[in-house]
Length: 613
Ligand SMILES: [Zn+2]
Image (cartoon, rainbow, N blue to C red; front, side, top):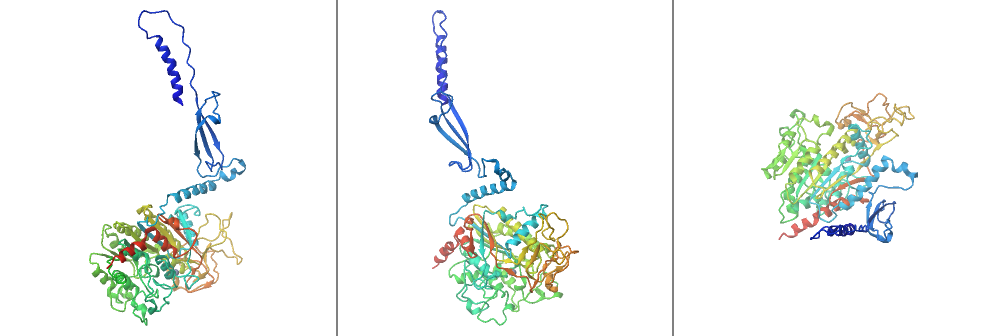
């Protein structure tokens, strides 16, 4: 288009040049030439598109271009030879000013942007089967929706925000769905049945680990023939690196469901199995003998055992003899519970002579992450400390974040990828003790561990799922004003002093439907002290009590020996390949199937097993 105009100018110029370039004597000056005609103009026309335009659903700009062939200095429709569209982002635009209060509002703009991001996430996800190299399953034990909300506010307030607007690391995951947590035989579930569902793809009974519903609770003989294969075992068979982390005892229900088969979750060592007949093996023994047990169940395969095991629960691995104590003063009794005289830690070291067996922060810190040798860390006689109480541990314990980071650094040495399950086990325990402070502190620590896992992996090859096994009877109540201390007493909107209930006493925002009730332990950071104090189910005058201290336990009005689980759905948060499958309301065992889709674990394991002679 521009070429035509340039050409016309050149012709006129060439005519002038020709007059002055003849050889011979000078003639008389000729007549001045006629100016050349202006070339045909190329015109561009821009117009705004309203919301709803078929090319730009959110509005935008249309740029038409073409030659002004009829030279009327306007680009007529018939002259348009090209149209380009510059569409606006998916932020709502309006043509009428009557809704400006909406569209100029920061809440409106922020969430409109989130819709945009969500649309991009949906397009960017790798949704092909088997596209995940690594899988990390985080389980916040007992982390129901109210726990996530309260922890998010608490985390925000600790950062100096009002709190409600804050996000935990996994709050920003692109995909979220719901899980129905009931066990096959229970409306409100326990961790054994729920983790079995998540990690083996099969819902089962309450209290049962790694067995289907045809096994009967606490009936050893009924276990035989009803064993399930877990995602961790499939990964192990397929040659991936494997790891288990828990802040609870590593033999406790949630971590145990990854590797053990037990008709009773409480069979953590042989002393828990008095009177049990039928040849069942305790959970601690099953962990130490995992490699040979798995090879025996699938004849011909050769696996190398779980690469990283980090948690608490030394007592189930040691003889009931104070001579074997690692941390506890011998005068206070033996750490070990085992009455069969077996030292499973010695057994583990004999199996893995180059392995790293550690029991404190210093030993943990000294582990070289470039190792290809297994790591076994048991940092407490029983459960590891609550995060708020961790500094009080005698020999020192790593945090959940430190354990997660180190485990990933070791597991990612395997080029085939890894399967890692991480449990924040003590959210549940703090709730059972009626202590919201520590439940929230451990949830915040889980959020940090998830962030560390995101930082240490690539979202294009690693599926990360964060979920809970079940909820708790934990509520966020009253009508506290925005930014009110989440651990505080309810102060109404516009007020500065606590609201009084009809009994003329203040009340806290957080509370429990049942449990051991009110305790005021001041700065005490061990929630479990509640079990040494009387159960209080009556109202208490909180006027002079600082309910924000670590040692405050919320009131409850139904006295139970410990606060209970709740039966409502829990959230499943996901990011990475296959995370787009986390949507809607699901049976909890779908979590296994999403992981299986993402990493093709069943096929990979079956290929190895079926290749055996
Ligand atoms: Zn529990």
